[in-house]
Image (tube, rainbow, N blue to C red; front, side, top):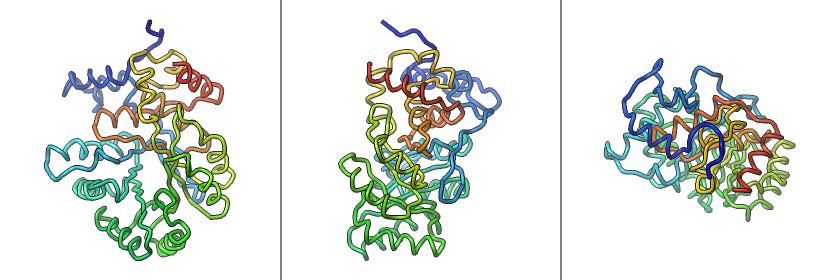
Length: 318
């Protein structure tokens, strides 16, 4: 039996978008998404600050693992080009990548240069080579592939060799080659070590896995980030798809729609970015329809803690 509510599942929404194709446009916005709330550029974008600088970012960015590992053909690159073109237009900025994501850095660098939008994006990448010289080479290769002389954020990937790499990243920050430095993980097995690093080191940012059905980071990592003034970027905000599998065919509850939520992707993302410690969520986004839906979250209203508990309970009980 379907739950009573409003809106539609992500699958139905995007299926209708595909059928609509190049249909009616309202003020430059596809009518389907304008009506659904997935693209609401007329409303203010939710932004949060990076504590170490006070600079703000839109709360939804894009992740590029796996699906940006494509070749040079127009067929492969066209959807990604459109996502990158749309991102700042929709009110987003953050693009997260890594050398380990196959050709993603090269694809991003080529397309961003082609579009001429480098100054409209906040580009983050990672370094994971253990050896000092190999790590330096990897970083320089990232600059080359991304076609930029300055990175907005550089992480030590999955804590690999962090003691040796953080001093190198600090030197690069002092030299103006990177704006921010941090540590990334996507595994709870590294939380204890990450916590130790956060307590010992001066970091601008961390990246950690966090979702409405994966809330373990709430226990210590997220509170510690607030205490230490560290920005939090979250990977895997859809919990590896578990939210969609559990609730994807149900309607969005009316109480959730009051916060501008019109799809389960927006439900999952809104839960993540409404945590006080979270700065930006970075969902994997490789199609224009997903870009509109995901970034549309940033045009909603952040729920309070009581509503967040209700959101978590809905998923837990599904």
